[in-house]
Length: 193
Image (cartoon, rainbow, N blue to C red):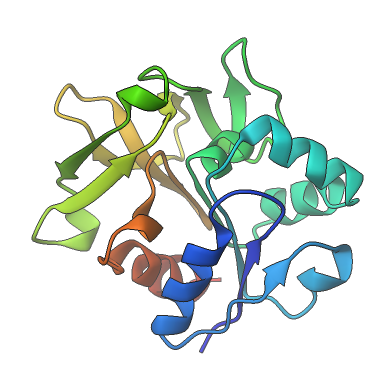
């Protein structure tokens, strides 16, 4: 089974680790450069994107992660992780890995009190709809020609996308009992690598 590192600098990394382990994988926490050795993929969890970027820089992980993500290594960013993967951000964001050809708007729905849950139709996951948890969530405002939108809100706003070996979700699949997005990352992103 795959070894999927979970960036463990800030945010909800423990929940991702638990899902990967429940699916039979190994999920070491990544805090230092040497933690990247031997990984088959990497998850960048939700949290506070500005704090994560600063911690990546102070841990000497920013450039190595930029090279990995830009070089075809399987990376999945959820919520803040999606912000970090994006090539283009709104005026409030700090570009980080700049690997995925998407434009992202941070905190698109407002403050913490405006967080919500919704059932999303995600064709690559099949039925039933995926129950998505949005917490101070970003949205995808623009996609490049190689980006496949995997899920949209009812108004058509993209909230999940894939580009080659990169996966991005504006919501938090790790906060639900439904492991289909983690399984999709393992089966269709990591194994494809």
